[in-house]
Image 1: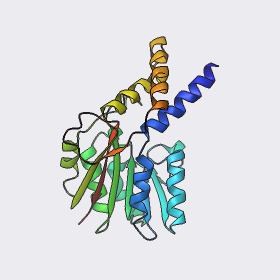
Image 2: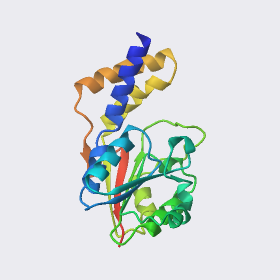
Image 3: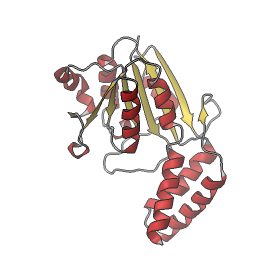
Image 4: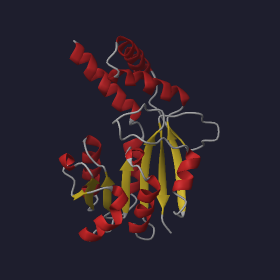
Length: 225
């Protein structure tokens, strides 16, 4: 029974916190004919789905990761992306970094390198959590507001920032994270979160952020000159 509830909780958490993430990414990638795509830290079912889409479009899909057990095509730190791609002779049309850069100590260096390796009109798609608690200790460093993301992405010609979910959705996400607390209170909060997520509309994408105080996370779609 315990494992069954844990499985339901994990399914509800992924459904809620990933809402809009894959759909937005696929929408942007699909605008390019035969796209070469590099996924930073790409691993797991999200990466599998994106790879299938890219291949169906006639493109090439590579992953870059510092974790060798994730079996990336390119092993290394995103902060050194320029040297890593030079050695592979691979020019990506799109670089994707979903829920990754909060784990990179020198975010500015990583984004500068990403900008440099993209060709003209190249696209950088990133997502970052906002309300999600600290995870993957001790390698969880940052949470960025839209204003901070704009500053980090200022080298790009254009940058569109969107929010996934609103204040209510971020509260439900926190309740669902009770799955990982290991305490009775956490499990109680998880159950409340599961109930609320089951009777609520899935978190939607928000383009207007002026009056949005909280969300599950932000996405930025940036284009190079």
